[in-house]
Length: 176
Length: 176
DNA sequence: ATTGAAACGACCAGGCG
DNA sequence: CGCCTGGTCGTTTCAAT
Image 1 (tube, rainbow over the protein chains, first blue to last red):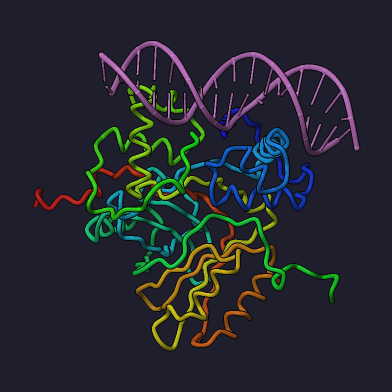
Image 2: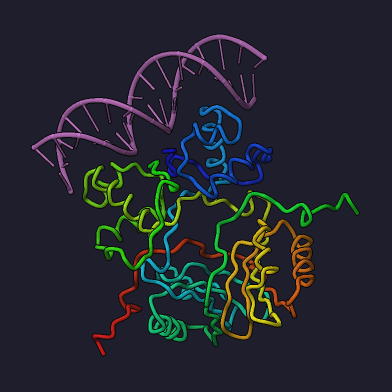
């Protein structure tokens, strides 16, 4: 399983062939364990190694598989404290100053959002002291009016995007 | 890079040797790209292939590296709609009914949280219709009093836990 | 932790359904 | 056109230092 991500060219998702059942099966497996050999992966989806290899290569080239990464344990890397920070800004978010927060490895996600807030950030820190430091840094940032912090007491589920879709949640305008 | 996750035994993070600078370097690289060969990885951290291999094996056995996965593109798998749902419950969350939501592949995260909410869920769906279906399902769940939904309009950053720690956010009680 | 060697898996070419 | 078979080559991984 040594297809290098950087060898791939990112393409638009539109000009790409729709995913068939086997593609979704492959993605389902790879989203949970990307360490399988192509032979093993082939066995699981009912294809030969070169065939799966070809499909995986295509899925990467098409940008369906963005990258392959190691998932680290927050506690083990001394970041037992996970929190979501809602940020209210004066203008409409996305200023250069706010995007600079990307440089903090503690910040894992930044989204602009609807609702009674402007920006949602997911952060993982060493301690409450570090969280305070991050919030202080936030308040020093131009355009930040206020924050609301939700500390995760325990995490019951945390996984990456799954290719499968629930039948009952499926977009089915044809059913009417 | 084909060390099988399932070959590893999960150990407690405590009874484990602390991470040295090279370990963190390895984790930093692998958290961004786990497709590198051990030879390449060795070059980056200044070690030979078997030496890195040994360390990576240990990091997996110790549970520092939880798993290695393919990151899928939400839009490409027909789930362009990302949202955070705050759930207010009557009792204290974590009921069996709520944990059953794990079966929905649309649900990526579930945390109990502090703040004016009980549960925070991260969900990724096909459409607003599917989101509505998921919320309907939520309201049908016993113990759910209400929800507040924050739809992500655009995602500016989304990555997995980083091993590095910002110097200025570092826990430094010795500095006083 | 390194080197050297063996086993294994990735991946190319060519041919079939 | 996509899949399979066979072969080459790079990589993982073991043993000894």
